Image (cartoon, rainbow, N blue to C red):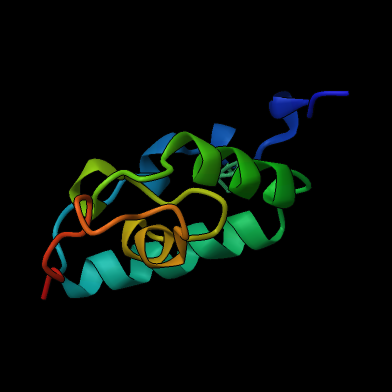
Length: 91
Ligand code: SF4
């Protein structure tokens, strides 16, 4: 049975999950978005789906908070990366 995505917490405020820059406001936004994900009934299927969808992608090809993880966290957790898809770390 597929998840009922209408129950996703991010549906209430999608802009919260797409971040701009790396300012102090960005860090506060990450905290708020991760808190919403932590309370979301779809956290596990969402994380599974995004990790499968982004498998092998570079860090710069991942956007927004998804499955309770930042793009960098998903990139680092991606076990399918190869030497060809590795990117230099973003400061
Ligand atoms: S876990 Fe996924 S579906 Fe739930 S709020 Fe976060 S991004 Fe949205």
